[in-house]
Length: 388
Image 1: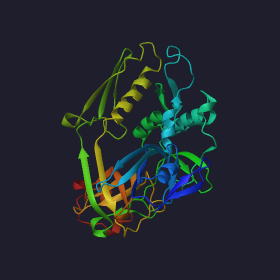
Image 2 (image 1 turned 180 degrees about the vertical axis):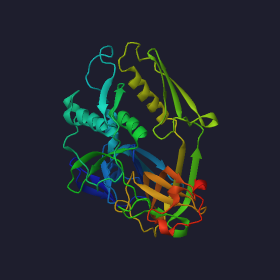
Image 3 (image 1 turned 30 degrees about the horizontal axis):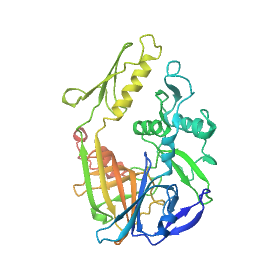
Image 4 (image 1 turned 90 degrees about the horizontal axis):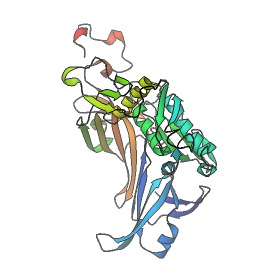
């Protein structure tokens, strides 16, 4: 797998094909990063100065060189570690704000719409229109997707968000965490740069629109897997308190009837919401959802895709897609591809997905049944009241 050097027009102008190793990581809701290790020489340093843009054949993302570290490896050879981040990091150098006014008159940027529409507006206003300064405009950017249409629907709920002075990157990432969408800056074959907000597609056996992507020990297509689950910071109720009153807020996927030991309360002090604010309740509700998004139940799954794996990243699956993990216990988990790592070193080329849990399906429950099962095939003696 070669690493290509790009010019300012995102065209291939050189190739790095004599590296020792590289790790290339792409992410759904965050910018990615890379580490490229090359032999120390004037030629390698000259080819990869800070600011150099890189690409690989397997990806449409662009990485930018940030750091070069001269060091030695375990065998005492002089090497250079070249480190950087994906192009989305440019959004961390843009201010998300409606006007360049003072904080007394305009303390926040208030936007109303669906979550994805707000995210697109933030990017468009700052990075395409340049409402704060023309220097913020990303030249030549096209707001469109070059990928197949997503099958996961965008959220339709209309919300109002109040954005403190933060970067465009943080504003998008905060919304993405709550409403489970991704954002990306990608390079197409015509060297044009594209930006889009995306949801991903359902590739589990719960649907029949796209071919299913299933990983299982029985299928021998996933190895060296590790699963981590934690509820240490989990909260499912927010008590939001302000001078205007208080509200109780629940995450979108939590039953408001939750009680007893299952009720985990988060206290949110919204001191900046004034007693005479006509939108106080809506603002407190949104504040509660924002804070609850930071206190979710966490489950992650790491594994190495077998080299004999039948699924190809970029064709059969993309970042943000839901895939299915089948375990030896018989349980199935619908998981989202939140990160994809490409590695090329002395052991060859391989891929590592990082999957985050979407839905755990208990054997015997309603969701456990195959999507194409018909009523006449169901056990007539089944006790429906005992179904999970």
